[in-house]
Image 1 (cartoon, rainbow, N blue to C red):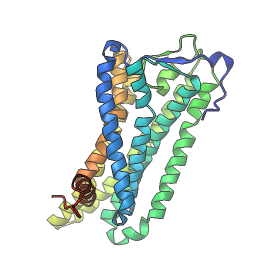
Image 2 (tube, one colour):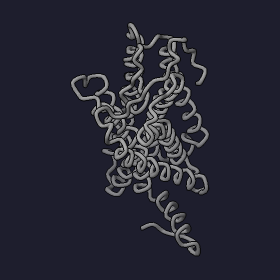
Image 3 (tube, rainbow, N blue to C red):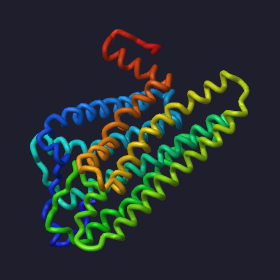
Length: 323
């Protein structure tokens, strides 16, 4: 990604301003940023470690959780370290190539995460509607292939964004009123007509967000139909428990993403610091909440995590059963 073809007029660095209007409070704002980042890294790496170590967790459901954890790590790491440098040391400069690379990874990981949520919805559909065929329909190898397809889709959809920007001249003012290089914030600095860039961004948002949401809604529509046909109260509770964690993670991811997108596109009357704050919600909250939600709602995973925590705190302990 470092090989973006930049014209000579685009070689001067961009300036990230952080959160406009709150520059004096940047050092205080860095405290929740750094705390959330450290906790999200710990939680997601713990999930990856436990699933990797425990053979009993080598199942499609937990492979999808590992994919989600990797996207959470990638999303926060692509933005928060640079934002902390800005908050702590007032290091605002970023090269054009670095800016476009950051923009690519942020949006690529967003599209990849959306694909994983769709695969998770399909996983829940098969688990509830075709439980006897679950192990034959969804194998680890098939989940890995679906994840690879989601990654290829994300790269192919997002790669044109920085490529289109790198071939156009920017205005002399290279100030970005943001904590990171978001597509619309960078597009506004183009000198001349940026209709193609704006239109392509809208198409990607529609194809990815709305198409993926429709697929998830379809999966849950079929799940609800199967749910209504179940007469056993115990089976009702089991089916509901199976979907709760995914529904919570899906709502957190899509709601924060849509909120950020809508404020960027249609919130012209809002102050810049409101735009930037909403954009950062998507980078701060889902990566820390996703592993916690699944850790709480998934008993098998909760037991294994508890066992490793117990071993680290009490070296003589041999096992632990979460209550």
